[in-house]
Image (cartoon, one colour):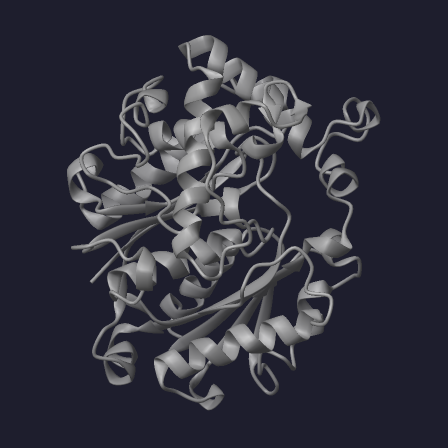
Length: 379
């Protein structure tokens, strides 16, 4: 397979309410940053993949409505409605088709203009579940309780994730909620749906992210420091929650396995230097860490017992602060990829982790981790 690299990324600050910025404003800012970092003009972009969601945007064909802002005039443009990691996967396949040298992938969302409970309720079966009012939070609570009960994970262990990631966000100027927290503060925060409390849940943020992919020959022309796609995999689980054991994450295990095989990784605990994963809720960082093979099943809760940083085999997880500190729906996974890119290029500023040669980025679609996309990136 021809090698593909990331040559530039751009992010807006993630905020509670970008009241003075439209969707197009955010997209334009992120795209301009990515082009500037790559040192190219929009004329070098062969095709564009826009990532958004009609429900979150409150309009149809939402991804097409930012065409001008991302410079797609007179170019091939495709759209993906889902997490940004899946949009990047589609963008990579367009390069591998041989038809294009470069792809610009851009994702955006303004959660401040949405009703997340109504939108995420629409994910569920319209006959049996939707009328119950189940949404992203209540379904996650079902998964959290099943996971905690099955493996003996404690709410205090989950709270440590929130303490760590909000603390990490203090070093990230783009994060929405940098905070110094304690476990009692997390445990004492308002209950949303047992066992998930307010500080166990990610905020709903506004923002955008852009990423430029290029085939090997072009990537080397553009930059002397490309970040290579070493492996990628995705997998989807059953649609109905009752058809899955929510304490497990088989789709993530399969997606990670495919990415690791492509990347030639045999022991992720030793060969991955940094992880940016999709932690919409505190328990999910523990569960997803297990699914990625960074610890044994049911052992995720033990990773934080020693203090403020989560490490297994010296692997920092979510040094950016993760989704718990800034959750721009749709763009969240693409931001994970951008964060790994910055770490690999040693351009992450105060949140830089030393000696990062191989990083992992992770995105999720659907309730309770219905589908996962895993990227292994390296220099």
